[in-house]
Length: 396
Image 1: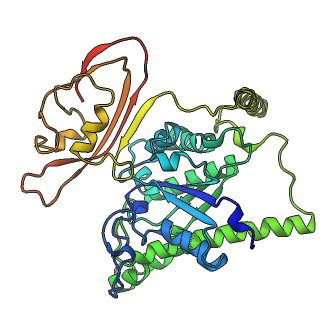
Image 2: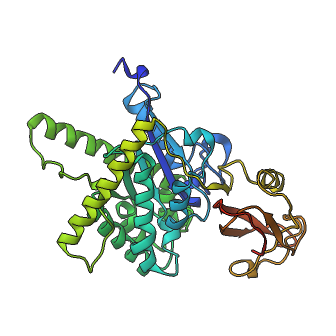
Protein backbone atom coordinates (compact mmCIF):
# COMPACT_ATOMS: atom_id res chain seq x y z
CA UNK A 1 0.00 0.00 0.00
CA UNK A 2 0.99 3.66 -0.08
CA UNK A 3 2.41 3.54 3.46
CA UNK A 4 4.82 0.70 2.65
CA UNK A 5 7.76 3.10 2.45
CA UNK A 6 7.37 3.78 6.16
CA UNK A 7 7.91 0.16 7.08
CA UNK A 8 11.11 -1.92 6.89
CA UNK A 9 11.24 -4.40 4.02
CA UNK A 10 10.49 -8.09 4.37
CA UNK A 11 13.94 -9.64 4.72
CA UNK A 12 14.59 -13.07 3.20
CA UNK A 13 17.95 -14.72 3.94
CA UNK A 14 19.12 -17.43 1.51
CA UNK A 15 21.77 -20.04 2.34
CA UNK A 16 23.11 -22.58 -0.10
CA UNK A 17 26.08 -23.84 -2.09
CA UNK A 18 27.58 -23.02 -5.47
CA UNK A 19 24.30 -23.66 -7.30
CA UNK A 20 22.55 -21.00 -5.21
CA UNK A 21 25.62 -18.78 -5.42
CA UNK A 22 25.12 -18.66 -9.16
CA UNK A 23 27.65 -20.92 -10.84
CA UNK A 24 26.73 -20.96 -14.56
CA UNK A 25 23.48 -19.10 -13.86
CA UNK A 26 23.90 -17.10 -17.06
CA UNK A 27 24.31 -20.12 -19.36
CA UNK A 28 21.53 -20.51 -21.91
CA UNK A 29 21.13 -22.03 -25.41
CA UNK A 30 19.80 -18.92 -27.16
CA UNK A 31 22.45 -16.35 -26.32
CA UNK A 32 20.50 -14.20 -23.86
CA UNK A 33 22.97 -11.86 -22.09
CA UNK A 34 23.31 -12.75 -18.43
CA UNK A 35 22.00 -10.07 -16.04
CA UNK A 36 24.97 -8.41 -14.40
CA UNK A 37 27.23 -9.31 -17.29
CA UNK A 38 28.58 -12.54 -15.79
CA UNK A 39 27.64 -15.93 -17.15
CA UNK A 40 29.63 -18.25 -14.92
CA UNK A 41 30.33 -17.17 -11.38
CA UNK A 42 29.01 -15.72 -8.23
CA UNK A 43 25.98 -13.96 -6.91
CA UNK A 44 25.07 -11.89 -9.93
CA UNK A 45 21.53 -10.71 -10.77
CA UNK A 46 21.00 -13.92 -12.75
CA UNK A 47 20.74 -16.07 -9.60
CA UNK A 48 17.31 -17.28 -8.54
CA UNK A 49 17.66 -15.34 -5.27
CA UNK A 50 18.02 -12.03 -7.14
CA UNK A 51 15.20 -12.98 -9.49
CA UNK A 52 12.92 -13.79 -6.55
CA UNK A 53 13.45 -10.31 -5.12
CA UNK A 54 12.67 -8.75 -8.49
CA UNK A 55 9.50 -10.82 -8.88
CA UNK A 56 8.17 -9.60 -5.56
CA UNK A 57 9.05 -5.94 -5.99
CA UNK A 58 8.25 -5.56 -9.68
CA UNK A 59 5.22 -7.83 -9.99
CA UNK A 60 3.49 -6.96 -6.72
CA UNK A 61 4.82 -3.66 -5.42
CA UNK A 62 5.37 -1.40 -8.45
CA UNK A 63 9.19 -1.47 -8.13
CA UNK A 64 9.17 -0.47 -4.46
CA UNK A 65 11.76 -2.18 -2.26
CA UNK A 66 9.25 -4.07 -0.13
CA UNK A 67 11.12 -7.40 -0.21
CA UNK A 68 14.88 -7.71 0.27
CA UNK A 69 16.57 -11.04 -0.52
CA UNK A 70 20.10 -11.51 0.83
CA UNK A 71 22.10 -14.40 -0.59
CA UNK A 72 24.92 -15.71 1.64
CA UNK A 73 25.50 -18.93 -0.31
CA UNK A 74 29.06 -20.25 -0.46
CA UNK A 75 30.51 -22.85 -2.80
CA UNK A 76 30.64 -26.31 -1.24
CA UNK A 77 28.49 -25.35 1.75
CA UNK A 78 26.35 -28.13 3.24
CA UNK A 79 23.75 -27.99 6.01
CA UNK A 80 26.53 -28.66 8.51
CA UNK A 81 28.44 -25.57 7.38
CA UNK A 82 25.30 -23.44 7.07
CA UNK A 83 24.42 -24.25 10.67
CA UNK A 84 27.81 -22.91 11.78
CA UNK A 85 27.46 -19.82 9.58
CA UNK A 86 24.11 -18.94 11.17
CA UNK A 87 25.03 -19.92 14.70
CA UNK A 88 28.18 -17.81 14.76
CA UNK A 89 26.84 -15.16 12.37
CA UNK A 90 29.67 -15.56 9.84
CA UNK A 91 28.30 -12.80 7.64
CA UNK A 92 29.16 -9.26 6.69
CA UNK A 93 28.37 -6.58 9.26
CA UNK A 94 25.58 -5.29 7.01
CA UNK A 95 23.84 -8.66 6.96
CA UNK A 96 24.29 -9.21 10.71
CA UNK A 97 22.40 -6.01 11.47
CA UNK A 98 19.23 -7.38 9.87
CA UNK A 99 17.11 -10.05 11.54
CA UNK A 100 15.53 -12.02 8.69
CA UNK A 101 11.81 -12.72 8.58
CA UNK A 102 12.36 -15.74 6.32
CA UNK A 103 15.32 -18.12 5.96
CA UNK A 104 15.52 -20.32 2.85
CA UNK A 105 17.63 -23.50 3.01
CA UNK A 106 19.09 -24.57 -0.36
CA UNK A 107 21.85 -27.11 0.32
CA UNK A 108 20.44 -30.21 -1.38
CA UNK A 109 23.23 -30.52 -4.02
CA UNK A 110 25.94 -30.75 -1.35
CA UNK A 111 23.99 -32.68 1.27
CA UNK A 112 23.20 -35.38 -1.30
CA UNK A 113 26.94 -35.99 -1.66
CA UNK A 114 27.67 -36.35 2.06
CA UNK A 115 29.03 -39.75 3.07
CA UNK A 116 26.80 -40.17 6.14
CA UNK A 117 23.18 -39.59 5.16
CA UNK A 118 21.93 -40.49 8.63
CA UNK A 119 23.97 -37.60 10.03
CA UNK A 120 22.27 -35.31 7.52
CA UNK A 121 18.81 -36.26 8.81
CA UNK A 122 19.43 -36.63 12.52
CA UNK A 123 22.10 -33.96 13.07
CA UNK A 124 22.85 -31.48 10.29
CA UNK A 125 19.34 -30.62 9.04
CA UNK A 126 17.87 -30.23 12.56
CA UNK A 127 20.95 -28.21 13.51
CA UNK A 128 20.33 -25.85 10.60
CA UNK A 129 16.64 -25.42 11.45
CA UNK A 130 17.49 -24.66 15.08
CA UNK A 131 20.23 -22.17 14.14
CA UNK A 132 17.93 -20.43 11.65
CA UNK A 133 15.09 -20.10 14.16
CA UNK A 134 17.49 -18.84 16.80
CA UNK A 135 18.52 -15.89 14.63
CA UNK A 136 15.61 -14.22 16.40
CA UNK A 137 15.06 -16.41 19.43
CA UNK A 138 12.76 -13.97 21.21
CA UNK A 139 10.22 -13.84 18.38
CA UNK A 140 8.20 -17.00 18.87
CA UNK A 141 7.04 -17.15 15.25
CA UNK A 142 9.86 -15.71 13.14
CA UNK A 143 11.92 -16.34 11.20
CA UNK A 144 9.93 -18.62 8.96
CA UNK A 145 12.16 -21.44 7.64
CA UNK A 146 11.67 -22.80 4.11
CA UNK A 147 13.36 -25.95 2.81
CA UNK A 148 13.98 -25.64 -0.94
CA UNK A 149 14.87 -28.70 -2.99
CA UNK A 150 15.96 -27.22 -6.29
CA UNK A 151 17.07 -29.28 -9.28
CA UNK A 152 20.69 -30.39 -9.44
CA UNK A 153 22.08 -32.86 -11.94
CA UNK A 154 23.60 -35.32 -9.51
CA UNK A 155 23.69 -38.74 -11.15
CA UNK A 156 23.25 -40.93 -8.04
CA UNK A 157 19.47 -40.74 -7.95
CA UNK A 158 19.15 -43.07 -4.95
CA UNK A 159 20.84 -40.44 -2.78
CA UNK A 160 18.80 -37.63 -4.31
CA UNK A 161 15.60 -39.55 -3.55
CA UNK A 162 16.76 -40.35 -0.02
CA UNK A 163 17.47 -36.69 0.71
CA UNK A 164 14.12 -35.68 -0.76
CA UNK A 165 12.40 -38.04 1.66
CA UNK A 166 14.40 -36.64 4.55
CA UNK A 167 13.38 -33.08 3.68
CA UNK A 168 9.71 -34.04 3.47
CA UNK A 169 9.83 -35.91 6.77
CA UNK A 170 11.73 -33.14 8.56
CA UNK A 171 9.45 -30.40 7.20
CA UNK A 172 6.42 -32.34 8.43
CA UNK A 173 7.96 -32.73 11.89
CA UNK A 174 8.91 -29.07 12.33
CA UNK A 175 5.96 -27.59 10.45
CA UNK A 176 8.13 -26.00 7.74
CA UNK A 177 7.27 -24.99 4.21
CA UNK A 178 8.90 -27.56 1.91
CA UNK A 179 9.25 -26.43 -1.72
CA UNK A 180 10.32 -29.14 -4.18
CA UNK A 181 11.15 -27.29 -7.38
CA UNK A 182 12.98 -30.33 -8.73
CA UNK A 183 9.74 -32.29 -8.78
CA UNK A 184 8.24 -29.71 -11.13
CA UNK A 185 10.67 -30.59 -13.92
CA UNK A 186 12.06 -34.04 -13.05
CA UNK A 187 9.68 -36.11 -15.18
CA UNK A 188 10.27 -33.97 -18.25
CA UNK A 189 14.03 -34.20 -17.76
CA UNK A 190 14.06 -37.95 -17.17
CA UNK A 191 11.94 -38.68 -20.21
CA UNK A 192 14.30 -36.56 -22.35
CA UNK A 193 17.57 -37.63 -20.75
CA UNK A 194 19.18 -38.35 -24.13
CA UNK A 195 17.72 -35.23 -25.77
CA UNK A 196 20.28 -32.54 -24.98
CA UNK A 197 18.38 -29.88 -26.94
CA UNK A 198 15.19 -30.37 -24.95
CA UNK A 199 17.08 -30.42 -21.65
CA UNK A 200 18.99 -27.23 -22.51
CA UNK A 201 15.73 -25.37 -23.15
CA UNK A 202 14.46 -26.37 -19.70
CA UNK A 203 17.63 -25.89 -17.67
CA UNK A 204 19.54 -23.46 -19.85
CA UNK A 205 22.37 -25.99 -19.84
CA UNK A 206 23.16 -29.68 -20.02
CA UNK A 207 21.99 -32.17 -17.39
CA UNK A 208 24.64 -31.27 -14.83
CA UNK A 209 25.14 -30.17 -11.25
CA UNK A 210 25.31 -26.45 -12.08
CA UNK A 211 22.42 -25.83 -14.42
CA UNK A 212 21.90 -22.62 -16.34
CA UNK A 213 19.57 -19.65 -16.59
CA UNK A 214 16.40 -21.65 -17.24
CA UNK A 215 16.66 -23.46 -13.93
CA UNK A 216 17.33 -20.27 -11.96
CA UNK A 217 14.29 -18.65 -13.56
CA UNK A 218 12.27 -21.75 -12.70
CA UNK A 219 13.36 -21.79 -9.06
CA UNK A 220 12.45 -18.11 -8.63
CA UNK A 221 8.98 -18.58 -10.11
CA UNK A 222 8.33 -21.78 -8.12
CA UNK A 223 9.22 -20.05 -4.85
CA UNK A 224 7.21 -16.97 -5.82
CA UNK A 225 4.15 -19.12 -6.53
CA UNK A 226 4.47 -20.94 -3.19
CA UNK A 227 4.80 -17.66 -1.30
CA UNK A 228 1.69 -16.28 -3.01
CA UNK A 229 -0.20 -19.51 -2.37
CA UNK A 230 0.65 -19.38 1.34
CA UNK A 231 -0.27 -15.69 1.56
CA UNK A 232 -3.65 -16.11 -0.13
CA UNK A 233 -4.52 -19.25 1.84
CA UNK A 234 -3.71 -17.53 5.11
CA UNK A 235 -5.65 -14.40 4.21
CA UNK A 236 -8.64 -16.40 2.98
CA UNK A 237 -8.71 -18.54 6.12
CA UNK A 238 -8.59 -15.38 8.20
CA UNK A 239 -11.48 -13.76 6.34
CA UNK A 240 -13.59 -16.90 6.56
CA UNK A 241 -12.68 -17.55 10.17
CA UNK A 242 -11.51 -21.09 9.41
CA UNK A 243 -8.28 -22.98 9.89
CA UNK A 244 -6.59 -25.04 12.56
CA UNK A 245 -5.70 -23.03 15.70
CA UNK A 246 -2.01 -22.66 16.46
CA UNK A 247 -0.50 -24.91 19.10
CA UNK A 248 -0.37 -23.56 22.65
CA UNK A 249 3.41 -23.99 22.40
CA UNK A 250 5.11 -22.38 19.37
CA UNK A 251 6.55 -24.88 16.88
CA UNK A 252 9.80 -22.96 17.12
CA UNK A 253 10.59 -24.79 20.37
CA UNK A 254 9.70 -28.33 19.25
CA UNK A 255 12.61 -30.69 19.89
CA UNK A 256 14.44 -32.75 17.25
CA UNK A 257 12.97 -35.87 15.69
CA UNK A 258 13.59 -38.92 17.87
CA UNK A 259 12.21 -42.31 16.87
CA UNK A 260 12.91 -43.74 20.32
CA UNK A 261 10.94 -41.07 22.13
CA UNK A 262 7.39 -41.13 23.48
CA UNK A 263 4.64 -38.54 23.11
CA UNK A 264 5.21 -37.57 26.72
CA UNK A 265 8.92 -37.02 26.01
CA UNK A 266 8.06 -34.90 22.98
CA UNK A 267 5.84 -32.71 25.13
CA UNK A 268 8.40 -32.49 27.95
CA UNK A 269 11.26 -31.48 25.64
CA UNK A 270 9.04 -28.96 23.88
CA UNK A 271 7.98 -27.38 27.18
CA UNK A 272 11.57 -27.26 28.46
CA UNK A 273 12.81 -25.56 25.29
CA UNK A 274 10.03 -22.98 25.48
CA UNK A 275 10.68 -22.23 29.17
CA UNK A 276 14.42 -21.81 28.60
CA UNK A 277 13.90 -19.48 25.64
CA UNK A 278 11.35 -17.33 27.46
CA UNK A 279 13.58 -17.11 30.53
CA UNK A 280 16.52 -16.03 28.37
CA UNK A 281 14.46 -13.47 26.48
CA UNK A 282 12.98 -12.08 29.68
CA UNK A 283 16.49 -11.43 31.05
CA UNK A 284 17.59 -9.95 27.74
CA UNK A 285 14.59 -7.63 27.65
CA UNK A 286 15.37 -6.42 31.15
CA UNK A 287 18.97 -5.65 30.21
CA UNK A 288 17.85 -4.21 26.85
CA UNK A 289 20.91 -5.75 25.21
CA UNK A 290 20.87 -8.32 22.48
CA UNK A 291 23.08 -11.30 23.20
CA UNK A 292 25.71 -11.80 20.51
CA UNK A 293 27.78 -14.95 19.97
CA UNK A 294 30.86 -14.67 22.21
CA UNK A 295 33.03 -16.67 19.83
CA UNK A 296 35.47 -14.86 17.59
CA UNK A 297 34.78 -16.32 14.17
CA UNK A 298 34.98 -15.58 10.51
CA UNK A 299 34.40 -17.34 7.24
CA UNK A 300 36.76 -16.98 4.33
CA UNK A 301 34.87 -16.81 1.06
CA UNK A 302 33.72 -14.36 -1.58
CA UNK A 303 30.70 -13.24 0.45
CA UNK A 304 32.57 -12.26 3.63
CA UNK A 305 35.33 -10.01 2.31
CA UNK A 306 38.04 -12.51 3.30
CA UNK A 307 38.83 -14.05 -0.04
CA UNK A 308 42.56 -13.84 -0.82
CA UNK A 309 45.97 -13.98 0.82
CA UNK A 310 46.12 -10.31 1.84
CA UNK A 311 42.58 -10.24 3.25
CA UNK A 312 43.12 -13.51 5.12
CA UNK A 313 46.39 -12.33 6.64
CA UNK A 314 44.80 -9.02 7.67
CA UNK A 315 41.93 -10.86 9.33
CA UNK A 316 44.22 -13.26 11.17
CA UNK A 317 46.42 -10.36 12.27
CA UNK A 318 43.56 -9.19 14.48
CA UNK A 319 44.19 -12.09 16.87
CA UNK A 320 47.58 -13.65 16.04
CA UNK A 321 50.75 -12.68 17.84
CA UNK A 322 52.94 -14.95 15.72
CA UNK A 323 52.52 -16.99 12.53
CA UNK A 324 55.04 -19.47 11.18
CA UNK A 325 52.99 -20.19 8.04
CA UNK A 326 50.44 -22.78 6.97
CA UNK A 327 50.12 -26.50 6.57
CA UNK A 328 47.32 -28.89 5.67
CA UNK A 329 46.81 -32.55 6.45
CA UNK A 330 44.07 -35.10 5.92
CA UNK A 331 41.18 -35.09 3.46
CA UNK A 332 40.92 -33.32 1.10
CA UNK A 333 44.41 -31.77 1.15
CA UNK A 334 45.97 -35.04 -0.04
CA UNK A 335 44.64 -34.21 -3.53
CA UNK A 336 46.51 -30.91 -3.70
CA UNK A 337 50.21 -30.59 -4.37
CA UNK A 338 51.37 -27.00 -4.25
CA UNK A 339 50.42 -24.43 -1.62
CA UNK A 340 53.29 -21.98 -1.75
CA UNK A 341 51.51 -19.73 -4.25
CA UNK A 342 48.52 -19.28 -1.96
CA UNK A 343 49.87 -19.67 1.58
CA UNK A 344 53.19 -17.99 2.25
CA UNK A 345 55.39 -20.32 4.24
CA UNK A 346 54.36 -23.53 2.52
CA UNK A 347 54.36 -26.68 4.61
CA UNK A 348 54.92 -25.22 8.06
CA UNK A 349 52.85 -24.60 11.14
CA UNK A 350 50.62 -21.80 12.32
CA UNK A 351 51.41 -20.79 15.90
CA UNK A 352 48.66 -19.28 18.03
CA UNK A 353 49.64 -17.32 21.14
CA UNK A 354 46.20 -16.84 22.63
CA UNK A 355 43.49 -18.72 24.50
CA UNK A 356 42.25 -20.90 21.69
CA UNK A 357 40.33 -24.08 21.24
CA UNK A 358 39.28 -23.91 17.65
CA UNK A 359 37.38 -25.74 15.00
CA UNK A 360 38.68 -25.49 11.47
CA UNK A 361 36.72 -26.55 8.42
CA UNK A 362 38.30 -26.17 5.00
CA UNK A 363 36.92 -26.94 1.56
CA UNK A 364 39.07 -26.74 -1.54
CA UNK A 365 38.62 -26.53 -5.28
CA UNK A 366 41.16 -27.10 -8.00
CA UNK A 367 42.21 -24.11 -10.06
CA UNK A 368 41.78 -25.99 -13.33
CA UNK A 369 43.63 -23.51 -15.53
CA UNK A 370 46.73 -23.34 -13.35
CA UNK A 371 49.77 -25.08 -14.85
CA UNK A 372 50.79 -26.18 -11.36
CA UNK A 373 47.31 -27.31 -10.23
CA UNK A 374 47.41 -25.11 -7.18
CA UNK A 375 44.92 -25.92 -4.42
CA UNK A 376 42.86 -22.79 -3.80
CA UNK A 377 41.10 -21.96 -0.56
CA UNK A 378 37.35 -21.80 -1.06
CA UNK A 379 35.76 -21.77 2.38
CA UNK A 380 37.27 -21.67 5.81
CA UNK A 381 35.56 -21.35 9.16
CA UNK A 382 37.60 -20.59 12.28
CA UNK A 383 36.19 -20.50 15.81
CA UNK A 384 38.29 -19.15 18.64
CA UNK A 385 36.74 -19.94 22.02
CA UNK A 386 38.50 -17.64 24.47
CA UNK A 387 39.67 -19.34 27.63
CA UNK A 388 42.90 -19.65 29.58
CA UNK A 389 46.12 -18.30 28.10
CA UNK A 390 47.57 -20.86 25.73
CA UNK A 391 50.53 -20.97 23.40
CA UNK A 392 50.30 -23.85 20.99
CA UNK A 393 51.20 -24.91 17.48
CA UNK A 394 48.51 -26.41 15.30
CA UNK A 395 48.98 -28.17 11.99
CA UNK A 396 45.96 -28.23 9.68
